[in-house]
Length: 153
Image (cartoon, rainbow, N blue to C red; front, side):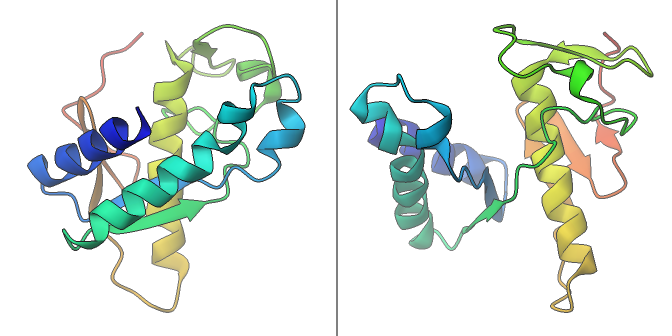
């Protein structure tokens, strides 16, 4: 299953003219999921390795970023609070206390991961920050702009 998922991720990146694939660096996942089956404990790292290997031959860059607050930060207005996405709430919803943005929690976090990577690249001395981050329904740029405009929720 991980090979299939990694192939699809690389294929989608190529279909959308992406140059980078960015993942959360999930340190301590074993500690946070003590009741997970053994196979789930290594699946996150294994998927990252498979994507990295497959992306290499396609000249795609695969990176990991610190995921701090990506699930609690509103991808629309930037307001960060733990109540936006309470830990272990068992729900797939994200609701911003400030602007009222109401979206799927994983989608919100994915936008934040992409934006965090873009901004980290702008701050680095290496330069060469990518222009935008491709999501299933559009592209996010470094200023937080989204094309096509996100539907209000």
